[in-house]
Image (cartoon, rainbow, N blue to C red; front, side, top):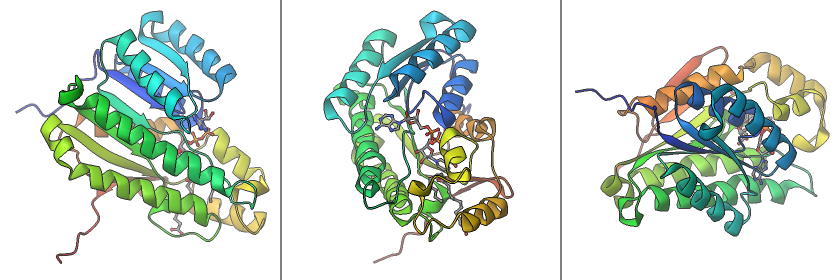
Amino acid sequence: MDRRMHLVGKVALVTGGASGMGCGFAEALLKAAAKVCIADINVETGVATESDLRQQYGHENVMFSKCNITSATEFEAVFKRTKEAFGGIDIVVNNAGIGGETDENWEQTVDVNMKGTLRGLRLAMYYLSVEHGGRGGCIVNVASMTGLNPNPLSPVYGCTKAGIIHATRCYVVSEAAKKSNIRLNVLCPAFVDTPMFRRLAAGDATQTIGGDQTAVTAFIERIGVLSTEEVSVALIDILTDETRNGLILRCAKKTGNVYSTLTVQDV
Ligand SMILES: NC(=O)C1=CN([C@@H]2O[C@H](COP(=O)(O)OP(=O)(O)OC[C@H]3O[C@@H](n4cnc5c(N)ncnc54)[C@H](O)[C@@H]3O)[C@@H](O)[C@H]2O)C=CC1
Ligand SMILES: CCCCC/C=C\C=C\C(=O)C/C=C\C/C=C\CCCC(=O)O
């Protein structure tokens, strides 16, 4: 039996799609002939990315929608707009996220990464579910390698990413996912060359605790840095291979792409 999900004509919503990894995901989806809504808080970059992608992949296949994922109203409006414009939603990539570990910004990290992604996950479950007019599909949540492996530089950020991994695993075993044939997986990249990464590498002290740039540089050198294209290949594999469900996909420069589950203990 053919277990490939063909992406031609499929509709994808990518949060944080204006730049970095999200922009790479949008482009990879468009190359596979899907239609994409990029949702992002940054209007200037979002409009520029929309224009660039429209020129390359067709006006009718790309839309930008302004959305702060911490706003319930804005986020729901993006789902509605995408459905109206493209006739449904098949794929949701919850990618938007930030770093921040200072006294001033750590709660924002929790609000965006944890609450924002949970909001996107809940909306995706609703809009993909058959009982609410959906047609099933695939949800990919972007966490991080540091949601699995501890690192001392960004405990709050790491914790939000661990939360995203666990939330995904809980929805995977839900009746709602099974009833509507919704696949859920979580992507856990190590470092990827994006504006967020470049800020860290350039010494943005708000991204880590301790402000020890020597430790940050040594950490980056040890782990290596992926390109957005490399991570996009991983995303397309998750989306097109319909046997991929409930999986954690780790991506790192030195170790490549490794699928796994977390062990569940019998109790
Ligand atoms: N760059 C890296 O090394 C890694 C990044 N990640 C994760 O990948 C995801 C994408 O990160 P990058 O592309 O590196 O970052 P980025 O900063 O380059 O792009 C993130 C995008 O999300 C948008 N965004 C931020 N807050 C938002 C909000 N409240 N609502 C809507 N959009 C918002 C930004 O405007 C930006 O366009 C994040 O969740 C990040 O935590 C995971 C592993 C490694
Ligand atoms: C280090 C925190 C940075 C905060 C935000 C900037 C970039 C985000 C990058 C990531 O999400 C990935 C970061 C690190 C993961 C890499 C490896 C973790 C495993 C560590 C180890 O095995 O020692």
